Image (cartoon, rainbow, N blue to C red):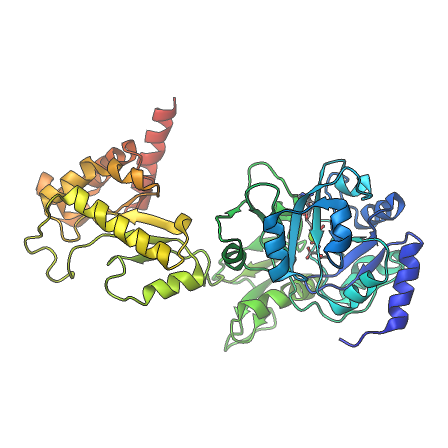
Length: 463
Ligand code: TXA
Ligand code: MG
């Protein structure tokens, strides 16, 4: 983007006068003011109608000035080197000597900090003697602004100046990571979690739906477009806007697509502008199509324990998603012919141990692995019974255990019922038995029945 120095000077002048202006960033536009000035920060809260207990992100050019305000730690430095400037916000401990306005921090001893990448805002930060407090430039709980026009629409004459920076290239807010102790994601955003995890080389937890709200941006209403939303909608009413990720062959005036070909990055970039367009047209609600769960939300379940296709490891590495490591003996067509073990329990234990060490060598993160001993996969009745009876032995591997016992043949062998759809009783009793041994996940056919059984069982156990 070509930089207009006169605009930057104007922005600087107003900021020195403790005014609040809009600035462009690569994520969304921000409402900025001098982070060291109570007066400027108060103006931001007032303009945005933001609750006083919701702290502001402070934007820095680099770590030079940040060092005066916050304690930096190793995790911060690793991530800073790799991703900054960029769409990542860090929660750090504030220094006692910091000059950051108490209005921003809500008198707490933490600070959210970010290094925006947008060239216009970087040029501005370079000539200021203070960092900029800047929440997203939208009235509280409304959709964020990704162009200067959006800011104008929302604030009109109330805002003194909008520094032009074109359309935000990322289009969704920064990812927020709390680095005070164990790294914890507080808000999903412009930077992918698996990329962050790779650089830190350790487990990070995602806490964007906590029972206790740490970061108010975690509230659902934070991104409300001001209309009711129906997710995963299939049948669209005429008075509804239909929000699609990918352009459809047939289009209607109430269809809005976020990307020509279903590219998720492009879709994110267009999300807020499209929601704004929809809002203007006075629809009664927004129906959102099923969002593809590519990469995230998916779990890989490789029943062969990576024996069928060695390349499946590459997929796990690329997407960093949970996966089920399942034991099976031989190929499906022959595996039930006289399966043999020295000791079925320990042989499977060794299998898990070997595969885990292999995965670790391939840089696969531990917290994504779920163990499944593979009931019925190369096992006779005696084997299956031994495994289910003693399943707790696998807890010592320190990972969640999944059991697929639903409607399996061992139930027929024990009860004589050959029709697999009539094996719900056996499924439920063995599921409860497995839960008593601490099995965390069940793979089932009869979701309602098993769900009801486990709910009742858990309630009884807890009283
Ligand atoms: O991409 C972005 O992050 C944009 C651009 C302008 O930088 N800014 C932004 O700010 O999204 P805002 O205020 O709309 O969202 C920041 C979130 C808020 O939900 C706030 O509660 C949280 O960060 N936050 C701020 N300080 C915090 C702190 N010390 N601890 C935990 N959360 C904090
Ligand atoms: Mg916001």
